[in-house]
Every structure is written in structure tokens, then in C-alpha cells.
Length: 338
Ligand code: NAI
Image (cartoon, rainbow, N blue to C red; front, side, top):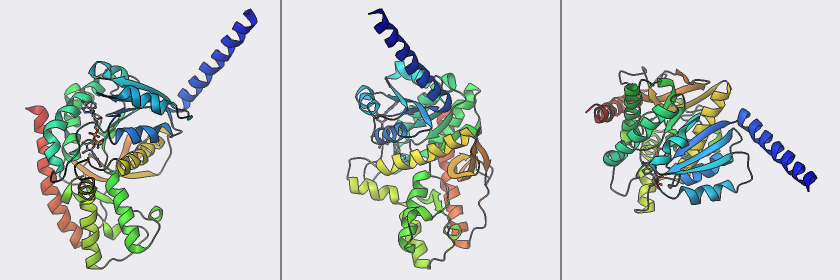
């Protein structure tokens, strides 16, 4: 019996060593709002990401079930669940990346700004805990209205004395994913071969696809430009209406969030040449925040890239976008200051 016990002990030790090794090579990621429409498929996809060694799932409801379920997947990441405000800090301690899809989604007829009253408070509370428990983590903010929630997060971090503009990124990747898909459809190409920069923000006219900079280089008719711009700007509403009251984009959003989080993690690991669009602290325009291409690296945003040459159609779109963006940014900032 003694021998048996020794065997058990040494195999347990092996197991612990393996986990520790995985931990040393992978990153620790928390999802806040992990039981929601986006949170669940996002958790599933992050559990499949080989760069993730520890995955924390936090929500105010239903995380025990979601965690038990996802934890049975035979991939490397160790999954732990956290339920309710009293477990928020434990969910955050030691995290390298925090992804936030917490908050209410749109119903038909609503704008993203209609979500402000509920989601602003949720984002503020979550960011206060991040400032306290993992101030060096990269934050990927998904909760809408992104044009206001990113300024809210920045303001909370400034107050806490932990603000690092390189580490706070509003996720606009779904706009890029949609733009790539819709443009590929018009051009008759594989969407994986298409790259459309989308700048500005993440709501209606603030979503500004730069169709003059599409790769591979191509030309569109004025009709195609109107159709594509409109469809990209209203892609979210297309889904909200099709779901008819059951929420907004969750599956394509989880895909986009993972694509973006993976880029952030590859940057953290030290890979070079990682460029994605995101809504960040910016000097590209006179506005304090703006979405454009950014280069990701070991510290988060290493460089905010300029917009490049715009045609007249895009310059007009930019003016409209900036007007609405300025108001949304101001609304976020004054929510925390008041
Ligand atoms: P959902 O309602 O299905 O899930 C939200 C989850 O957040 C729920 O599980 C809820 O319990 C949780 N939650 C609420 N308060 C919380 C708190 N204080 N702490 C932690 N978790 C909390 O909504 P869904 O569809 O997952 O959307 C989430 C957010 O993402 C919405 O604000 C939506 O507008 C936004 N969104 C953003 C997109 C983008 O491109 N950035 C695209 C699609 C949605």
C-alpha cells in the first residue's frame, strides 16, 4: 500500500509540474460577462487558444454551469469560474488580459447609445476592480456603447492612477470582420484574402470603412461604395432585427473578440508585425479617442498608425464620424467626473 501511495504522489507531482510549465508559457485571461450571449462562445473559443494557460470566467449569474461545461474540453487552459461581485477580485488577480463583454445588448429600434445608462455603471465597477487587482493587464472592452465605455474606463484608471493608454483597447474588430466579408462578397474573393481598414468608432456613422485602402487593391463603383458603407455601418442592426428581440450579434462577435484577443496575446508574446484596428487613446485626429490601425506588442499598443490618404467620400464621412464621436466621448468622460 505504501508503494501505491508513493506512485500516486509522484504522478500527482508530475501533473502539477505539467500545469506549472503550461502556466509559464501561456497567458492568464479573464472574461467578465462570461455567461452571456457573447461570453459563452468567447469562453469556448478562448479555451481552444493554445496561448491561454488559465481562463477565468466571471459573471453575476450562471458561471458555475458555464465553467463546468467548458472545463471538460480537452485543451490546455485551466478554467475557473467566479460568481458575483464578492468574487470579482479573485477573478482578476494575476490576469494578463481582461476581456469585457458584460452588459445589456440592443433590441430592435435601439441605438448603442440607448444602452449607456445601464452599461456605463457596469463598466465603471469592473474597471475599478481591474485598477485594484491587475492594473498592468491589457483590457479589451466590448460592452456598448464602445465610443463611450472606453472613455469611461480611461477616466476610472486615471482616477486610480493606473491609466496606461497602451493597455486599453475598445474592440471594433467585428466591424473589420463584417467589412472583409461584405467586400469579399462584392469582389467575388475569399474573405480571408481581403483586408479592409475600418476607423472612427463603433456606432452608425462613426464606423468608417476605408474602401480606398482595401487590400488587394481594387476599384468600386459609386453604387458599390454606398451599398458597402451602409451595410458595414448597419451590420449590427441587421443582426438585431433578424434576432427580433433576442439580442444582438453574439457568435460573430465572439469570433471577432477571439481574433482580436489572439492578436493581443501574440503581441504580448513578442511577435512582430501585428496590426489590427481598435478604438484607442489617439492623436490621429483632434479627438482623444479614435479607432484606427494599431501595432500590438509586448506593452499593448506600441504604435497608433496614421489614417493614410482618404478620398473625398471618406473625408466627408470622417467629419460626420468625428461630430458624433466627440459627443459620445464627452458623455463617457462626464459620467465618471460628475
Ligand atoms: P447578454 O445580455 O447576452 O450578456 C451579458 C452578460 O453580462 C450577462 O451574462 C450578464 O449577466 C452579464 N453582466 C451584467 N452585469 C454584469 C456585471 N456587473 N458584471 C459582470 N457581468 C455582468 O449580452 P451580449 O449579447 O453578450 O452583449 C454584451 C455586450 O456586448 C452588450 O453591451 C453589447 O451591446 C455588446 N456588443 C459589442 C459588440 C462590439 O462590436 N463591440 C458587438 C456585439 C455586442
